[in-house]
Image (cartoon, rainbow, N blue to C red; front, side, top):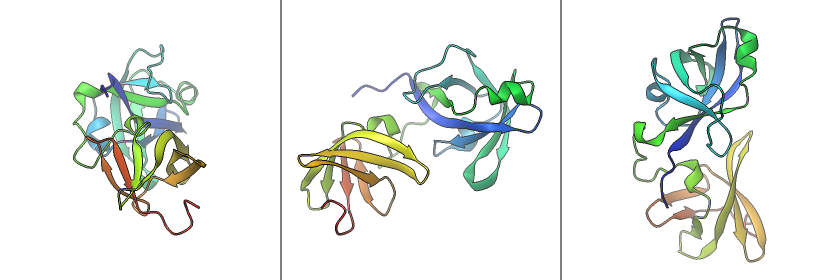
Length: 177
């Protein structure tokens, strides 16, 4: 699997204040680095494809907000109305400018197509989609008997093996029935 040119690193949630700031949900393990002043980012869609306008988003300043969110001011965002036009869009960054994922880490877009197995090695199915739910990410796993949603969190996901494209799960009793 080849690495895309751009990867999703955040999502613009809503405008904040009167100066054109945005509440941003970071989708990265390195939000301080990715959203540092001077960083060049792009507005994108849910597939990580860049949007035509604006051509670039340059971080002017960012600071921590509630529950892991950030307040980010991009150059050129002059007021609340302009910032509001960009809410619910994703933020993408050039993959070559980011630290590569560490062992056990994976980009969200890489999950689709991965095999899902139990800790015993028994095949459960294949990730057909990834959904963003209010509780977090969930994997839609296609099985011979249909599909099952598996929350992407430490309670269910035991390990992600990027090289072998495998997700090892430890589901509670009844989840796969």
